[in-house]
Each structure stands twice: as C-alpha cells, then as structure tokens.
Length: 299
Picture 1 (cartoon, rainbow, N blue to C red):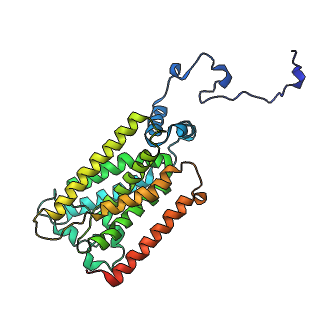
Picture 2 (cartoon, rainbow, N blue to C red):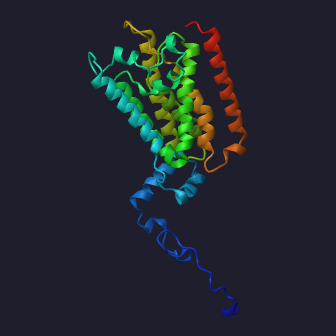
Picture 3 (cartoon, helix red, strand yellow):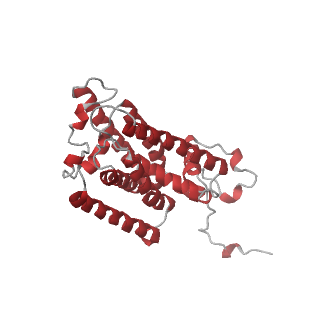
C-alpha cells in the first residue's frame, strides 16, 4: 500500500528514551546490552525494596533526588546534636550511658512533668547512651532515606511524628509512672508501615526479597523489644524506669497510618477511605489520651 508523503505529519517525532534514542529503533538492543549508570541502578534497587513490581517502572520514570531526603537527615542531625550536648558539655560519670543529665533535661518525658506538653514530642531528641542513639540512627537512616526518596518528606514526616506522639501517649496510659527518652516511636512507625506494606503486597514483590525483608524486621524488632522489656522489668538499677510502650505505640501507628501512606504511591490520599479511617482513629486515640492524662492518670 502506497503512503502519501504529504499526508504524514511533519511534526510527528518518535518518542525517545533517556539516552536520546528512538524507542522504535531498539529492536535488537535490550536492557541487557545498555550500560546502566550508578544512579539508575540505585533507583532500581530502591524500587525493588520499597514498591510492588507493577510500580517499579512508574517509579523509575519519575525518580529523582529533588528534593533530597531532607526530613530524616535533619531529624537525625538534631538527635545526634542533642546527644553530643548531654554527653560532652553536661557532666556525666560516663558518656557511654548517660545518667542524671538527660533525666533533668527539659526535653525528656517524665510522668510528673507531663503538663509540659512539648515533652510528649521532644523526648525523641534525648537518648540514654551510645547504643541507644546508634541503633535508632542506623535504623531510621537505612529505612527512612529510601522511603523518603519514594514517598517524599511530607509523608515520611507525618508517619514518623505520628509514631513519636503515639509512643508517648501510649506510654502515659499503659506505663504511666515510667520516663521516656529516644526516637523509638518514630523509628517503629517507619518499620511498622514498611512491614505492613511488605506483608500486604507480598505476592506483588519479589518473593525472596519479601521473605528476607520480613524476616529481618521480625529479628530486629524482636531483639530490640526483648532488650527493652529486660531493662524495664528485670534490671535492678536505681532511678527512673524507661518505658518500652513507645515501641508498641509507634509500631501500631506505623501499621495503620504508615501503611496507608506507604501503600498509596502516586495516589491522592484524600480520596482513599482508609486514610480517613486512620485519621479518625488516631484523633479518637489522641483525645482519649489527653482526657486520661488530665482526669484518670495515677501519676
């Protein structure tokens, strides 16, 4: 069949790929023969670990580092700066495990000072020792940076702060006489959201990676909670007891609010009924916790 050249659109141009080659000219040249740059390999790894398989290509098409994962980096810098302040400038018997300085801090949560409402959030900046700060920083950077590259800072920040607040409020209800320091509520919110996303989308993710990531999360969480329970109930150290409930409160916040945020990639949350269900549930919990602390708390 003859084609009239005059009928062809002179402005029609074949689509091109990132290397400027026409998409139609790639016949014998597959991805295996094309040199993949470091940035593209990095984003491929991120998509495999963070998203179901059907969203990998969509993520790689729009992947960029602008804006960078600024929230989780700034939070980590703030927590490290506060730890250094209390470890170096404040007098301590030893800086490996901080003592009286952090309990007298205006940032730590203490049941007898709970009328100072900022403590329900600011406790995340204070850590009890090197092991405590390093564990939280490593976990939130390893998990938070990839999550923020995929979902951006607002979503990750909302989940993190929801976990921090849920952790302190849950501790004030279920372990009301204990003190609270550390960012475990926020860290466990990120872990909880990622865990639920991996479980719900297990079939859509690479099976071996799915088993591996779920197994790693279970081992890390089980070990950390086990140590927290040991420190809370089995040690006989004199002084304030540190609550373990923030881990659970943050994890529950992550498995609800975090799951909704992290499973709704490139979707409008305001049209998702799960989003509003989680928001209403969180607000009800918040109101109950406030009323409990005002009228019912034994502290």
